[in-house]
Image 1 (cartoon, rainbow, N blue to C red):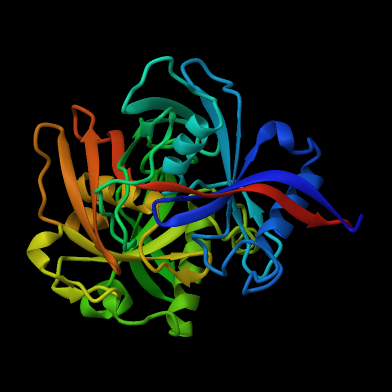
Image 2 (cartoon, rainbow, N blue to C red):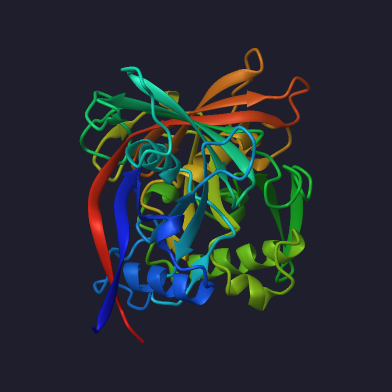
Length: 379
């Protein structure tokens, strides 16, 4: 045979889509696994026309789910960001949107079940990328993950069933602390001082203000995807900060690991029009932002980034905190993030001293798209 096959399920979770595999269906040898991921998505072509990706960072993803390794978990799972036009299989970060789909997969594939008819199931999933527990409330019908519902989330035209996703004690998963360089760091870049904040919540993020880049708030909601000079500047900052925070040892190593840290531009609330044509008033949001993922501006905002930014907006001294006038109420709050295609509301609970994060949470929708055999060419 010219090809071999592997059982595979395609899920959408939030505004991301990925290939889901049962750990037991994959070969143990890492090179063989990576070939399945690369060929399945088609990392080799920018269009990803020869696989199931679609040429965007939020659809070039893989999740592997297996039995739990820690007490209290129902499943373990590992997320992989796959390259677009390059052979990259990166497990350093994670995906906040596909967390909802992890819950759906765990229910649909029988990792968790119930003898009674319930409207929802609680799934505890241990994410090996960030070594954190994820609590998922999965709506169910007839023992399977529910799809249809009335919850409307930004970035999708049709509503769906609401999944509650909470990441417990999310800080420091990759770097050991929420602020590995303090709330604010002065980066020297080409004889210019640029203030940045590095926040390690779910994924490490580097935040800059629009003003520090010579952008106005309204510039954030123009098409910046063709601004190669800006993209190159942001990539330079991303690589420099990767070394400063100890994530990589050199600029070259950072450039070869594009998944994390991620980088985002933030500003104070403004009136703007989303990419879908919806008018957003500044009174409806607490902060506005645009992020880069895998070298391209994200069309919405990554789920991991929403968790991170919402917490950063409430933590004193950070650049996001200086762009919002929100105050925490009773150690808990909802932060409204304005992104290019709408508003995301994120639950944030801080520790009692209000210097770190107890949990972050989002409501998402999820859907199984297909299940079958994924065909992979032999060498």
